[in-house]
Amino acid sequence: MSTDIHSQQRSQKAQKVTVVGAVINAFLGVLKIVIGAVGQSSALVADGIHSLSDLFCDALVWGAAKFAHVDADDNHPYGHRRFETLATFALGVILLVVGLSIALVALMHIVHGHEEYPDAYTIVAAVISIAANEWLFRYTLKAGNDIDSDLLRANAWHSRGDMLSSAIVLVGLIGSLLGWPVLDSVAAIVVGLFIIKIGVEWGWRAVSELSDEGLDAATLAQVKKVIVETEGVRRMHQLRTRKMAERVMVDMHVQIDAYISAAEGHYISDCVRFNLMSNMPSIKDVTVHVDVDDDDHPYSMPPAIQPTRSAILAACLPAWEKVVAKDQIHDVVIYYFEGRIELIVVLSLDTLTPRGQTAETLHQALAAAIEDKPEFALLRVFFV
Image 1 (tube, one colour):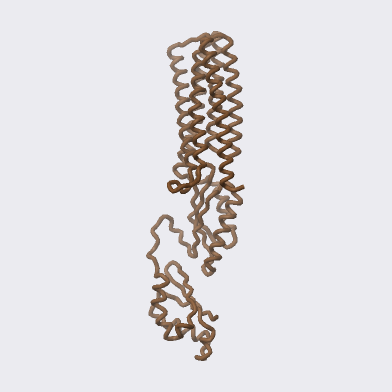
Image 2: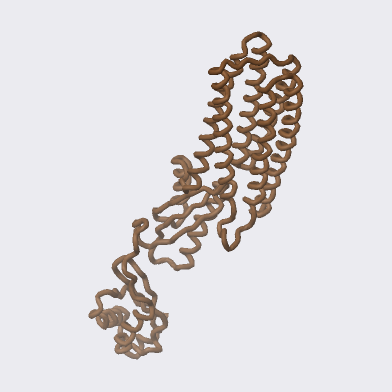
């Protein structure tokens, strides 16, 4: 399945789950407000208003699920996944506010001795609300786990908070009918604190992601293992990871053998990407920087740039052309290392014949021709 198709299906599933939640919240809100008003239960009316306010959260989740999967554009080259993270943070703040309001209102009821004696049939609405919100919690949480969405998981726990809120209303209703109305307020404070805890946890997870927090130690160890076990990788350093909704972005430096071709080095980097994305499906973007030296100097300015190919040839060719003819020099291969440059000269095979020189003597002559240029080391001479 392509990434675009998977992303589209993920978005569609998140939107479907959210619409189901919105319909249920609208139904419960109207039911509890009507029965609470008729049955003289202000707690049930408040819980109904709470359910209707959840429609705002559902709209937030639906919008995030839709826009987070819009393709990358010029302003968002990495895509729009962070919209989902922002919505998760907003949802965490909403849970925090809801939990605080429930706890504070209940505390005020205790302080002021608020007592309420509603009609017995109001219990039915509270029971329906408990059952519906618990089902919605399980349904949304399963969908969130299926598509690995923190946003849906946070919304699921919001539904669990709604279920507990309705359970508190039920306890309060039963307590009021039995002559202990204070039970409603005590239980409401406990539920409020629980909702605050969930809001802080999900809000902090979103903040951590927005601040580019890396993967946990166990997952990072798995990433390192896959990289260093890739054939051709000598060592790895400067590994960095970050999350973007359900996606993980990875970049690193890998050290390879210095004398292989650029094409083989590129092939090794492709193998690193393939192995990571095959073994860890959450990794969707991998950037590999190929090194031939150990340049483990993170975030520092690179040393002074060494001479370019044209500058090297301008310095060496005139000296070499005193030893061999210009048209006999087929190529010059350059190896850049930290602090030194090594050269390989590729000559025509017929260079040896008219001069009666051996490959060794010719190598020595070419090396001697640039001995006044210590920054260049003539490593080898090849003949074709």
